[in-house]
Length: 477
Image (cartoon, rainbow, N blue to C red):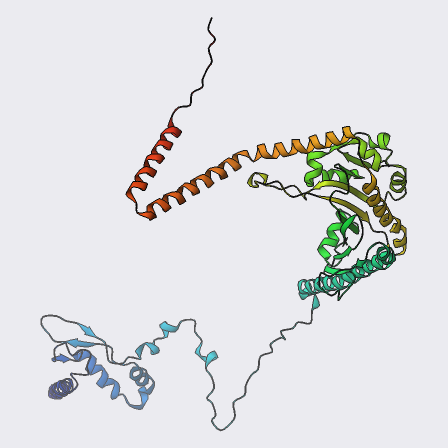
């Protein structure tokens, strides 16, 4: 019993010594301890735990494996001796969770452990095999290639188209230049004091103009060469569905008083129907002739717009009919009018004055191919012949009276259509005049004049507001 009692006494002394050591440590590290709020009288767990540790330390070499396992496990719990509350506090080891194998289940640390880096040797860089940005497969860029091909085709067509239009316009001018020089004193006026660039004027890639002046019967002649828009690839593709032709349009401003008063047009039925709706003089004065082939012997497929049948028969005489039959495929239209005012205005109600009219001779011809440009040269001679014909032709009295009656009718229709607008404009002018008079009277600062003007204005307002009455004459029985 004595050895056992001595052993127990020795253990009790060790426990007391450890308890006093813990109390000193807690007092020194009170500021750094996260658990300083607890009482300082914490002790270690139990006598069984302490005796078990002492037993493990005394096992010697035979129990080295078991002792190492015990040493690897840190102390987990500290028991409080406080009577009011008992609690378990974790140890201060903040890296304890790295030792728990359950925290890293399925994670193989051996596979991802990097070998230690040798500071003496240079690190080996591993460059990944990244493919080039520009791929070697051209089929991946089919959209870009189509866009580039489209742009190249458009620009190639632009230069080829404008070159062809310029060549065609220059060919027409060179073919008709001698005839134009014979009939006009100035060919190719550019509008400047000194004619620096005689010849065609390029308005656009598909439009060329030529102004000629210095001839009797007219004030001047404007020639417009309207080509197919060959420089525009989109218009060229659209032309496949609606075919177009190169055309020359001639506009001659006749001298006032040269021709009699009538309006006339002849041409292909498609063009005649179109210009009948577009031009004001044809819409107001002319009517479409039924069966013109039988009445005027024009080619089949041609239409006639006529105001005075007598004048139409005089214009469509044998020489003109022969030219129409011979050059039917090249003649688009012929338009003669003394009341030409341009195209139909969309808002005629806003105009209080009739548009200015002038006598003109208009013509439109289709251009042939390059090798056949000489074939349409007689059509320019036809224009000069019609000018001389209009100079000498005079209508009968009946036809002249009918023409004057038509012009009076058109003027009355215009005045009737603009009556409301003109009445409103007149009322506005009277109101403005009244305001000016009032301002003048008030500016004089004469009370007598102001009183008389106000009295006059009251009488005018009373007369205006009075009911209108008619006087009826009653015959006595």
